[in-house]
Image (cartoon, rainbow, N blue to C red):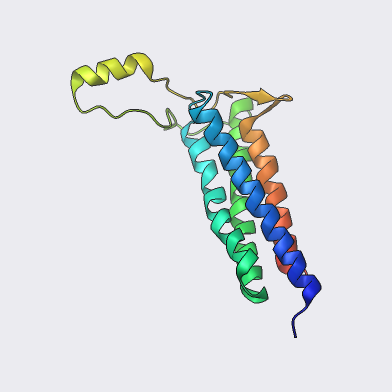
Length: 163
């Protein structure tokens, strides 16, 4: 017997996680490609849980109840990991603990010749994981990422375990 109320709650949660993940990644890509904020290594890593949550949330929309619960549960675990990464990154930005020692740049050209490499050095900015590129309402983008990932993980996880 299908519990229509539980199924509707699962579909609603999947839709929230899908929209939240798409908007978060989309916002990061707009900041990167439109406004020129170069992401650091941690910034790029923090996107991975959203990339995984998008197809899992899509699955939650279309799969039967048991599989939808599984998909949302997996999305919740991944997003909790992303929230932890965001807390670590924000803490490194505030100087609460050291950031990764190998963090020094996200994306950029990878020239093959020495002359092209020297030209690239003039235009490429090295991004440090312990420096906030932008703060909104006093919270860095990494901090906002932690909040968003935790909220989405809560929505997905609660819906996955609630009967």
